[in-house]
Image 1 (cartoon, rainbow, N blue to C red):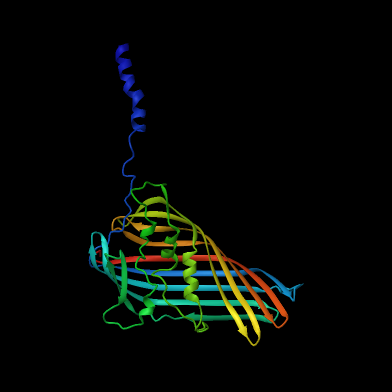
Image 2: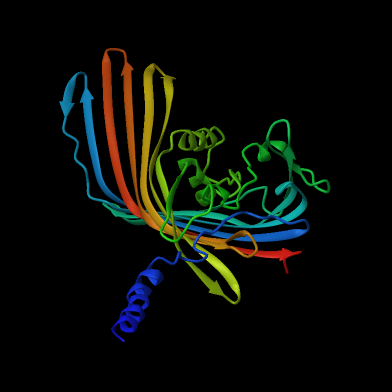
Length: 350
């Protein structure tokens, strides 16, 4: 009887160990973009940036002598909103890649407003920007030799080809995906250039404001922001949930980055010569979540928010006859950034 008791006790003692070492089931997730022929996607994007002036520093040197510059306190704010809806029709797919896609732009609108309360009392100004791409349709085609997409207006449309120069195909957040299967709490880094998919859907949409002068260097400044972008983006598979029978991956995104731009001009007017320069530095820390439909293989959208700083350093170095003026002004802004996008799929996926 004692032997029987000992034999019976052994399985009971090992049972907890056996349970503890059972490998977890179905933790690895393949998060992939899986486009299908005749499918369609509607992407509705919004963005809101609000900045307030925190400080102004001014210095001036006239004929080699420093002069004190009085800075008047000004309550000054800048706000910008942006919305666009993209309707994409997949026309052809090969080897898991979209090779031809028709994209139409609608509800394309950008507004900017500024308000302040200074020595002359409250002042405000608001204006809206317009784009010739609003209501237009373009076609992206995969070029095997160039390993990239070409873009042209749809066959039924006639537009200025320069409007297409800085458009790009990928708005599907594919650059944020891991290189392989991942489990909950796994993290991975993506190239900081992926930020453009969140901030600038489909590229430069050529929005023009009435107050823009013909010689504005907006396109050059925008390219500098892209080229000078530096920082890191870290993604985490936070959770996998089920919604209405659909398995959804929640991908956390943290962005810590900065960028710069510079522009200047030479002055030679009525005896005054010299240079005028402006340097801008933008830094931001954002967090958000990308929602990914694991069943259908496409993004469902994202939400992103965080803090942004904006520093503008303006300077003038001018001379006339035997007089010289060197002047500098640094404006420092802080604010909040919010962006979101929802993706609805149709066509063959309905």
